[in-house]
Amino acid sequence: MKQIAGKGCDILIPSGDIKPVWDIERSIVTKFRRKIWSKFIKAIIEFNMIQDGDKIAVGISGGKDSLLMAKLFQELKRHSKNNFELEFICTDPGYHENIRELLVENCKHLEIPIKIYESRIFEVCQEIAGDYPCFMCAKMRRGALYSRAQELGCNKLALGHHFNDVIETVLLNLFYTGSFKSMLPKLKSTNFKDMELIRPMYFIEEHFIECYTNENGIYPLNCACMVAADKTGNKRYEIKELIEELKKKFKDVDKYIYTATKNVNMDAIIGWQKDGEKYSYLDYYDDED
Ligand SMILES: Nc1ncnc2c1ncn2[C@@H]1O[C@H](COP(=O)(O)OP(=O)(O)OP(=O)(O)O)[C@@H](O)[C@H]1O
Image (cartoon, rainbow, N blue to C red; front, side, top):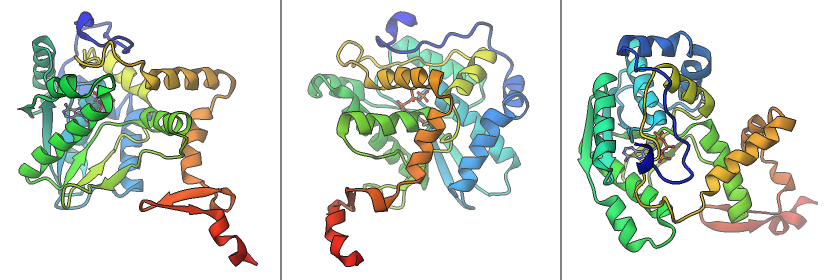
């Protein structure tokens, strides 16, 4: 499988065989209770992500993050006071047949009742997105997931972005677009009426997702992209490395990057954007006398 993965991707290969599903589920509320389960619950509560009557489409790409997210939601449904329904959906963007087989086998073993929908996303990106297919691919996948979710009567779409995705996004925006912008834990869709996107893994650190995956012998889809492999230098990996380097000298730098997104001091900001409009602090400078 390794030769199918994109260049520059981290490959997660478990050291042992996959454990029985019962053990895997138990590990979430025992060994990984503090580092994974509690963080999942914290995000759901802090950002008020689930309400009675919700029908949530859980996006499963087959990677480590979304496979864990599926198990977390199943566990939550078993214990939650909230009355909500779940659908597990995958848009197959054109995975290699071995990759698709791995996805199906994993979901079977993990008892995730996945619904897989065909699409030609990789093919389309290959044809028309030139040297930078990632942005287009992500947008198309998101659109396809929203459509499927809506067809299934869902009002929410859950994605498996985790804590490291969040802080890497903050730095990517800072360094490569010159803007201070985060990834929000939930947001309303602008294109799909009454649909909301939620990111319940917002506080879970990637390292613990890797530990859980490895410890349970799960072989997830590792960077199943068939398009971008040789085209783009992956900036996200560079940022990941940079954060790791910084952490050697300043252990909590990751926590501080996140905290900064909650502590923007508008009295010390030169300019900002809101609802597509640009503002400058000078617009208000003389009002403050
Ligand atoms: N083809 C897909 N079908 C369903 N959901 C998807 C698909 N691609 C992405 N997603 C959802 O969007 C999230 C973020 O996608 P991204 O491509 O950034 O994945 P990732 O960080 O590699 O996560 P994962 O380990 O779950 O693949 C995934 O965790 C998953 O919830």
